[in-house]
Length: 293
Image (tube, rainbow, N blue to C red; front, side, top):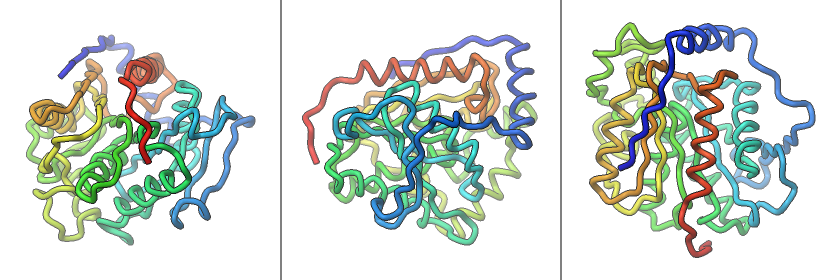
């Protein structure tokens, strides 16, 4: 396991917290030249958009990112989510399929997970090689992509070339020490996570995979990059998962952003640009894999 600490300053933290609060009221607008194409007929009935910032080459040639947004499994902010997908497309030169998965509590587990898996399989059906697909997600979306990897592996589907998870919830038993030690330092807390868990699981066992990816068999997963803020209550969810995946032989990189709270990556500040740059560099260094369905 490769661990990188990204230093920040108290001024960085204050700026991030201020911008996160403002995002709830004034999300940054998407570039009007961005290419947004609805995909409902082509993704097994799962709604979403293709978001393309830079490339017009075929997806099978450039590679594709399947993006699952955050929001505690129960909320959606389309303008912000489109912006995040656009930034990822801009940084990597790949089109991004942003999945509009079903939301709890109206559609509890496994509805959202099934949507992500269905959308991934639809990319394979469109002729995009699995090795040229990257799964990316943040917060609950990062949980969904890690859960999807376990389901796909269990079903013997071809796995994607890599996955990028920002601040995932990996253990819905809420047993990670940082949920207590970072309480009051983050925008999330135990009470919020408990409510998220209740709405999402609707009675499903929090100590089982794939809903809690940490409790699954991680052997054979593709290369993973995890990013997390050191002050997040979910810090140990990322750290414990990285340790378990590394012990299972998975190639994994863990980037720890010192002083950062949850959702730091959603800002327009330098720390968010650093995350995109590190992610793009990591993707460019991935070993080539044979093109499989």
